[in-house]
Amino acid sequence: MMRQRWISWMERRQWATCVWSVAALCLVMAVFASLLAGCAGGAITGDAPLLPVLRLPPQLAGYHVYVSDVSTGDVAELGVFTTHVSKSVHGLGLSADGKTLYVTDVYGNNLDAFASNTLRSVAHSVPVGVYPVHMVNTLDGRTLFVTNYEATSISVIDTTTWKHVKDISVPAKPHGIVLSPDGRYVYAACSGAHAIAVIDVQSETLVTTIQTPALSDPFGMAISADGHYVYASDNITDRLLVIDARSNTYLGAVRIGDRPALIARSPDGKRLYVANGASHNVSILDISSDPAHPTVIATVQVEGYPHGLAVTPDGRYVVTANTLSHNLSLIDTTTNQNVATIAAEEYPNDVLITA
Image (tube, rainbow, N blue to C red; front, side):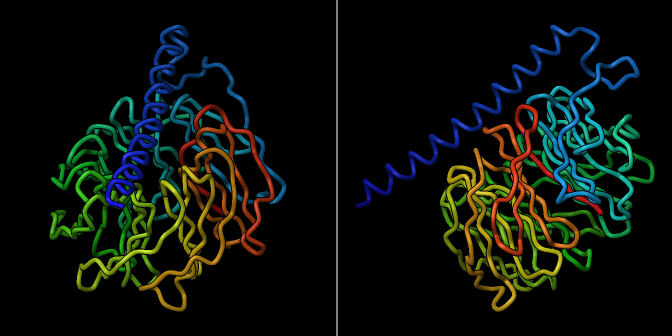
């Protein structure tokens, strides 16, 4: 039995290596294409070639839907515009006032900011740590915390001056990040150290580290509407981890799909949606009746290896970024059905939706 479990764990680890190798290959291809293109690559200019506009399905009319692409380095607003940001980008975020779109440039190790009503030019670009992936803005909008996946740090950016203030040392490979509803703490999933880092927003310091089980790989993050519970996807053992944020202790886990990545919470705080890469589906969990013990209420099949996902502001739809099938899926949350597939570019990675 132990041998079987070890083989199973090794198979999952090999699959993870394969997926990250695909991402690395996409990045190399993007760099090569940029070199061939000469001056057409790199910064956004008025002379840059027009990029394809991704289709906005009729169900999403009235929403602004943004998608990042790891391979092309593009960010698209569906139905409106696609812009080239860098040779490779990863995560998307929104400012506290909803006026600024944030993009992590994993090739240049920068955090880029756009006015959310236009993707035609970078408003600000700030150097951060190695391979920045996700970010969160404080409630007052003055500070950004950015996870640096290939480092042991979270970068702090002052958005009033657009300066890199400092790096906070955390356990290895910080990835997903979330802000508590009261704005006091930031929680970051440290996938290389079986840990959740807890940062005090006011002092900008690491206040504690919450250990998760051995061999776990905390990856995506979410938090309950009241801030009492923190949730992390376990990208190795295929579970959703539950943390008591009042005592900063690990409570337990629930089995979800294979290789879970990012998590989105419904606006009413009653549901969690988790993108399960290797099982090509989304787990829907109820956290309204007993948030300490989430319950899987549905599993929705999508396409190849979903990574990022987002819920519309009214909670009506979920959009997933399916990395290996080069498309997006649209889930109707009233029926928990996949109702549309939208062609993307090469390697769609993260999704953000605003009203």
